[in-house]
Length: 253
Image 1 (spheres, rainbow, N blue to C red):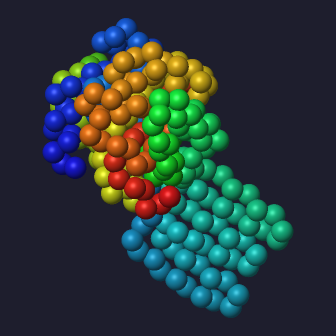
Image 2: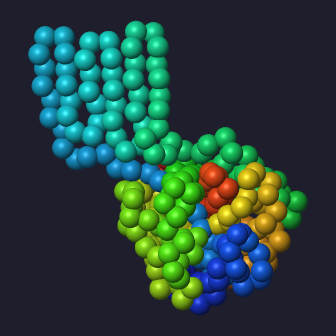
């Protein structure tokens, strides 16, 4: 699929929901016809593990697991789980892997819309949801898109990913395309629709439907016609919303 991004790059345009866009909309799509801003974050654990066993206590040092008596703590960049007796508490140190309820709702709305147009549903992708959710959180908390010249497809230097300022000339397009490979097990490129000012899945989809460039991405029209989607993910947080599309099947599905 290396040739596709190069062909698509010539048609990219940025349409942030709360920013100025080529069509006056508030959405961003990156890939073929639009520049989409998406968020999701998936992190990789460390490669080194050291285990020490003393009596009933086992300690594993790395980024993975520490077990002592009845308490298990898993530490990575994504999820921490503590189990004590009959009680289990899970907290997120960043972004939960997979699709959140709001992301699942948005994907359902997208597939219902595609069904109205006679198009097949796109399988939900845990990997692309991870990327999408990480991106919206990054946009909300670190605001990489507010730096001069940067748009909603930008990523800060505050996470386990390659930072970049996505500019209107699409010089950093690859920074967005490779995020699924960089952050998850997804094997292909990712293409993003992004919006700011969307408080609900319905508002986000409505904004993208109102932009011909973003609508084409969702419905595989125009330059997207030869890229049938086999995976879709989403992320929503703090008024930011993104959709991520991929032409490869997600191994994590």
